[in-house]
Image (cartoon, rainbow, N blue to C red):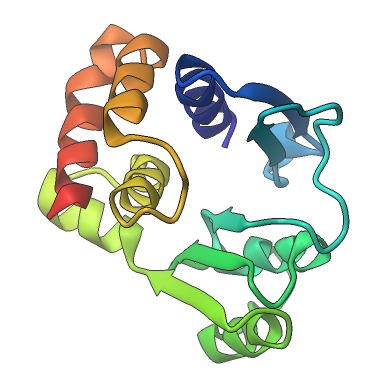
Length: 174
């Protein structure tokens, strides 16, 4: 998520937007979640998205996407990787349970099998976040130009991973 935050922030700044970001790491080093907020526009003062004010929630894992309910409203778009990571000693929520939870808040919930697509087409599911972000740009869900996201990917992603991420970006275009 932090890499996605950096890419979005870089792309937004390159288009002249004011940008504020926030990273909430929690226990991420021990397998916990990472939550990031990115706000951009003409004048942005706070990096945190207020309750009910999100335009888009990108979820890299279905159960974690439920955390986005706090910032969501009926018009918030959810792009969620159709992927569940089991929680130790807990029964994972089903796809239907996650969908029901998200649809209580928003009517625009999209489950995308990003991990499966990336694994099948590229041999690596680790780029599923780049796939979701690129898809959001190509579908005009996020108001940034694909060229700005592409430039940001080239700037942010380390050289040894760049080719895979560029292939992922182009895969989302189709």
